[in-house]
Length: 502
Image (cartoon, rainbow, N blue to C red; front, side, top):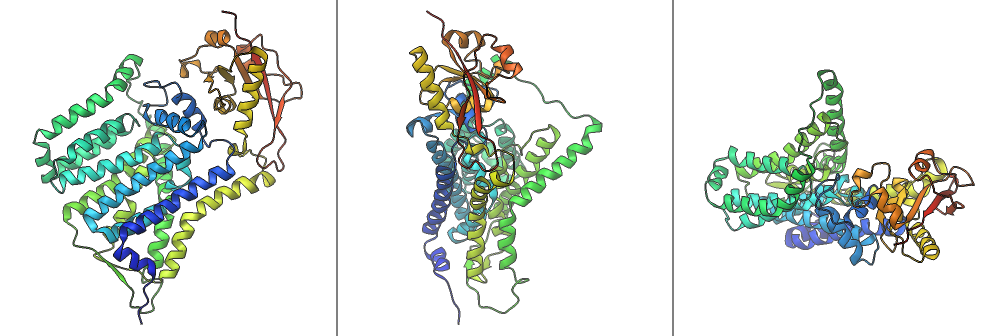
């Protein structure tokens, strides 16, 4: 007797409902983890918020849109970084929704849900999403671009040009990789007969005009900042290690897809040879052009992004792993045929849930267990809020003015800059990166200089003492981490630069 689980029946009858259940489940999971276990933002998120607070058209971090949105979300949440975590999950929900709509247009709603379920197991859509920035914001924009590009090329819907132009302009304001991604779309259009026909109308010209208008402020900043420069090609002697680095990046992308590989293997007849009348998920025949579209954009961003990153010494896949792997689930579903049999449904459900939840459990285990067995610090255990309030209150109590600027150790200064008064961040070792405040302006406004204290006297490091020659160190302040473990207390040295009289 055939047994069909409720999940399979829901996929067949209500695919959109299944989509919202699983996507909101993953979003709630990655909102709960930082809210409970993080005492400071992960990665460079604190620095990104400090840059976004200034609302500059451009910085050395790249186009400004992601940093502006991060600051807006932070303020809307009452100056709490939880608002930025929500923004990250909204981005991934939007990306999955665009992927679902694209899959529904090509393989039907039922298999589109399967594509989303597979894509959710990719680890690039978990922990990295908490560090909101250009790589996270670019993901939904790229997904929407692919959706509307298919509606234009594959379905001949001219009304999608306007949405595509808006998304392309916003992508240019988000990541430097936007030009390469847009060139991939143009190359695909030129390589297909339908695509060439769509480019012969006036619609692309109007779309180009909208894109230029949206990206014009950033383009003007690029020209004025004189940052137009071709990257330096590696020497012949460096090609071999760079190609090895390419292999490492591709290996990282493949490891990120381990959840998809596990589910495919568990559902294959190789693992489960016992005859079974398994339920099937049906789809209409897929047009050859749609197959090409899916395969090209499942492979090209990963290959090109990893190759460019390896050649020019970039630490991550250009465009980001979420963009590189966005179409992976849909590509696997397309390869699987018009009928996808779901064998061993309980095993598949358990494996999918484990693939989605395991990264979150790994993060929690790292935060709770690592301090007891390793001497390395967990960055998210540093109490950013307590630090910001302590230094802000001390400065205001001594000068009768709110804290206007903070400098010193870049990581600690960025965390203090998240305090209630949102002071300016001065990267005094590299002042060109923070042009909104100079050393002279810092001395005029006054501020707090902080560093990791190496002794009980709070003696500043030699480089900080050289840049702030008149600073008088205060008694170091000790802060408690979320989990102390075997690590020594977090001792922060600090000193106040008093504001000059007007």
